[in-house]
Length: 440
Image 1 (cartoon, rainbow, N blue to C red):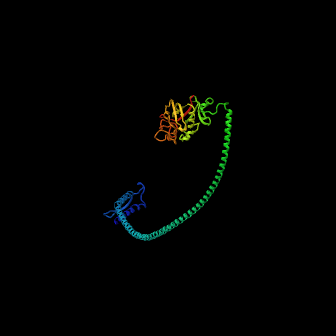
Image 2: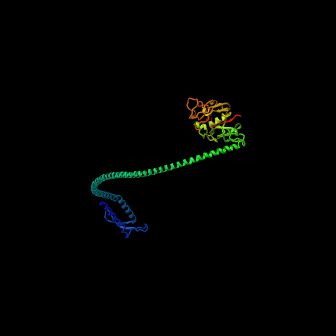
Image 3: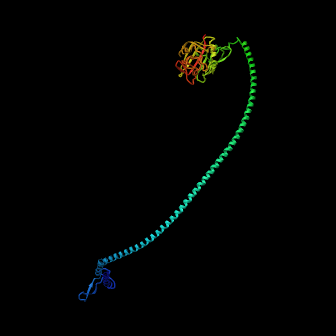
């Protein structure tokens, strides 16, 4: 290190002598402006001063080159070595200082952490104790709350039951009171109605007796007046008591419902067909739409029933009156589901009286429907309450209506149309008309 400083000092002295002692300043201009310097030199052997003429610029350049080379070769290495050594020393010193501080900091940090841990443990213990106390308090509070709730619910249920019983008792008392009041009102009303009804019934009976007596008197007066009128008009006009529809054929030409007198005294309504095969037919049975029930008893078939404008049965007693006081023919018109008509005609038709159960005599068939009523010939009339059929299967009229049944087969035109269609010779029909007229 000292060698380097010595060399640097020598070089600086030379530079001072050669550069700054020539005319007080170095030659910095071009070579033409620079002056040659004469300076004494000392010989290395003789130590005698020599005079040499030096070129200052060239010398400066050489000196600079020498200094640079020497510095690069010697000073640079020493400086680098010195710098590296100093750097290493600084690094070691800094590392030692940092390590010392780090160790000190770590110790302090460890002590601080230890204190924190101890503090946390203490806090944790305190917290656990507090949590335990809280849980204990909660459990105690929960038990107390449950007990209070149980007691409250028990008391509420008891009060609720008591309230229900009280309300029910009050309601029953009011209901009983209301029922007693209503019963009394009903009894009073019933007594009042009974009294009024008895009074009204007595009044009606008295009025009815008076009205009946009056009507009987008026009826007798009317009958006397009618007989007198009939006697006066007899022979003046044509007979008014038509026995059947054929009697009025000369004066009435339109089909419809008219009053006829089969016994020439008592009138009854009948539908008169004035158009079929010359007209004059008295219709004794008609089925067109099923609106009239033919499920009737003996008396109803005897007297007749239904609506003469629509569906009806003329009455067996009238059939007897007409057919036994003259020779009558029968015509049966049948219409199927396609509105096609077929018919059966009989030249003989007689119905006996009630004592003979309105026995049928029929014969002389012609037509297109088939001679099926021949199976009814000689049979008595059967209704649901009087069984005169010859079959062994029960009363045919109960299922097939009143008729001159033999064994419930072949023909039944009075069956309920809600149960089945009209039946003739194995075929079903939706409409039928039975009519009679005297044979001239």
